[in-house]
Image (cartoon, rainbow, N blue to C red; front, side, top):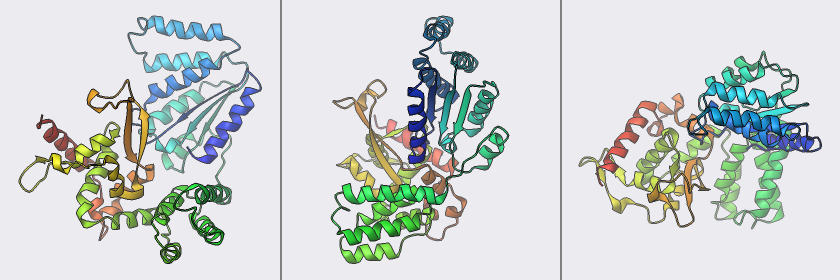
Length: 377
């Protein structure tokens, strides 16, 4: 979640805690979540607002109980229309403002259906309902919502830069590999990154990752004087730094993370890299190609991928369950990475066209990999 968005949610939440007749609910769109759809958004909002309906809890409970009863005591899932009706009824129980925040709208998987839903919610015409959407500028979002917007706030670069300086300062203080530098060098790093960021947090994150690899003051100085100017130029450098022998594995990984219909666990990624659907001697699964340490996969694509440890006890296939019921997920590090991989200019890049991801070819590769892997057992 962006710092500006979290600040908004924190401030509105603080405002609502002083008055039980107020309520806030939010939904964060994350491109890494493969199961986001309008029903899941509505369920999240219904849950949050139901818990905050302290003025008329009996009325809210009756709405939920009726929905539960209508769906054979929970044996059936409510339809989209039923969920919309329930949310509308619950919003109507609040005497004062209800704030609903849609964060990172540009990252939602199928924007058309979500924009249509937001437009419909706005059309309920509750005087007490306040909607807020945060997003990068995207034409379809602006075109759909512009007639609904009463206030529009552009995040000025200068405002974001102050947050970036705070972020860099914290990294220089807390990070083991960056905190070793003397105050003068830390100030130089902070100033150089803040000046070069132009409001891009993601750019700063990637530069800090690169600076962590510097082994001497000379390398640090060279890195700071030769920073990439844009985020995509940063991604270019990351791909150019991949060793020739690792290019095939890196492409496999990026295709899976960009196009898989479900989240990819770290252990699944290890199996993917051990599977070669286009081997010289035919399709092959080679257990000897499994990484001894699955986390070494992170070294293939540097700042383009990341891992998260999550509790998935009720969700995991049995063969993936750990002793603690945790699952390590591997994802692209940012929505912009996927946009970069399918970028038309990457397809025609003189040195990097190898990494361009075509939707049809990537899905074909994933399907072939799954079939070859399943045929081994």
